[in-house]
Image (cartoon, rainbow, N blue to C red; front, side, top):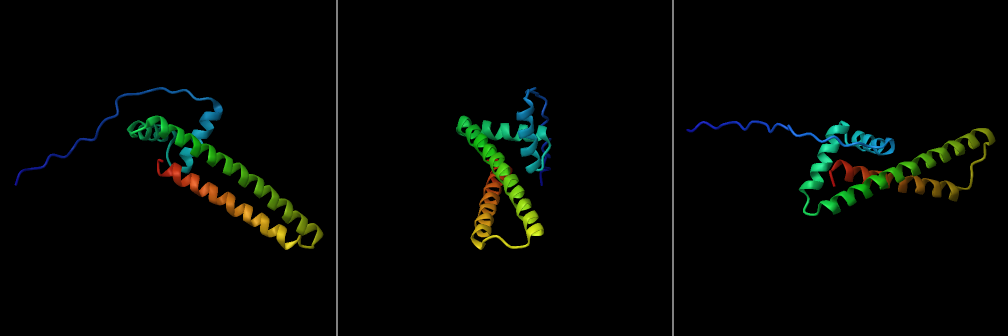
Length: 128
């Protein structure tokens, strides 16, 4: 039986040195954290995913849209959290519950926001 040669891992010897604004780097750091990757690895993997695509320009545009959606959803969730804190403070101080319809609308808003974040995170972490 012939002996199989193990493939040597490909060494990554080439480097690029991109520069980012503070806002751009914050976006990268957030996306990398959500993907459970170091920022450098995240930049490399997402760059390669776009480069390997049949339409690299579309892949980059889709990625940008996904990150924007994630940041927007994150902002909405922060607003919802603030609203929940205000509602809790009101209930603790004044006692009576607000109208049931108001609570239902708030909970629907929370569920919609969480769904938006879930979709965006899934897209970012799956490399789409």
